[in-house]
Amino acid sequence: WVEVDLLENKRIRGVITWPRGDVGPEQYVKTFNIQYRAEGEVGFEYYMESGNIVTFVGNENVEDIVLNGFPKKIIARHVRLNVLTYFNRPTMRLEILGC
Image (cartoon, rainbow, N blue to C red; front, side):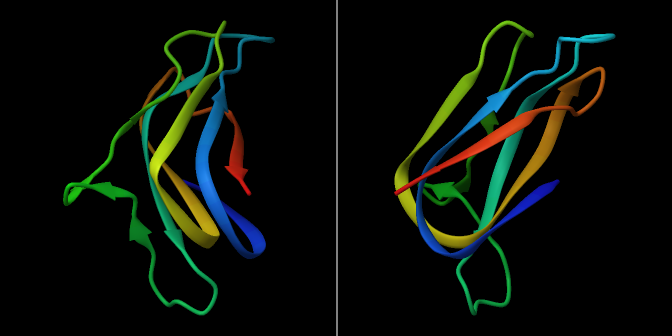
């Protein structure tokens, strides 16, 4: 997983992922889930919809960037992206979208 500390609570609206295809073999994250916690909370929560952990679809090639918006906005200081499946190696660039 990769964890980002936003230094204070922020409203999170989604994530953007980029593959790696510039040098060597193609590498990208295919699916992932998100965990988060607000400042002062002890444990992480999974991003869920209808009581189920959401599995997000990431990259499927090295050409495209992928936007995954969150229909349910979250308030968090810490955001974790847990890689579930990947192509060659779990390599990516990540942008967290907030207000």
